[in-house]
Length: 275
Ligand SMILES: Nc1ncnc2c1ncn2[C@@H]1O[C@H](COP(=O)(O)OP(=O)(O)OP(=O)(O)O)[C@@H](O)[C@H]1O
Ligand SMILES: [Mg+2]
Image (tube, rainbow, N blue to C red; front, side, top):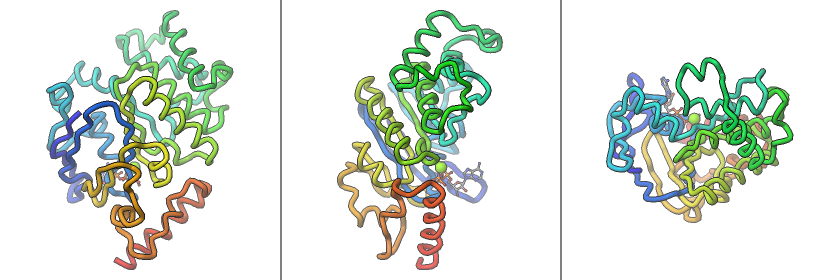
């Protein structure tokens, strides 16, 4: 995949500014940056959830941003999205939620009728097994813990048979243990299935632990693109636009999610006051 001079403006806000990067083979990439840096917008443009203002994304020589209609849907199926809030259908059982990933492969009529073939069921169960939650298959999605729900979302993405997985803050709502299980699953999918995984992460330590490559965004621009192990505190400080008081702890998963939000808000205010 080649992302070339990608831009997105919302009114006067330049959410993504001239982003360019190549993904030559299967990679596990962590996108980091403070709130509002443009991480979600970048992923959403790749998946066509948000139309790009300008730029191109080449895959096998064709510009996927130019795709319309059925070709666009085919692309959206090829790059499965995973969201912070899981986006499952709460009242449906887990297996059905997972098989909804297959619907992207069938026509609309079958989608509406929710007709699943034997192969869909087998694939759905297999995906749940891979994520270690096959025993939850018949429970309602809403009855599962957050970490289990995110694993269901990953299983759903897998049944879509994607070429790439885009995960927007997949662990931001999870406790540290669940976060680890979810990140382990994504890493395993990258390694075993050879899929590129691009993951927006609030936490620097997660990016360092799980990703080979880190893309750092600041004010819509890519300000770092390189190996995860080379993200030193100085590099991180630059990405996060912070002063000497920058403390990596504010991006740590060791904190409970609510505490982390509070810490981020406090940190951002402090950074802004100092800027
Ligand atoms: N639909 C929208 N309408 C208007 N402005 C938007 C929209 N979506 C994003 N923006 C703006 O674009 C910028 C980048 O937002 P984006 O959500 O991509 O950031 P982010 O890095 O994902 O932040 P966070 O870490 O909080 O999720 C922000 O200034 C945001 O307010
Ligand atoms: Mg975001």
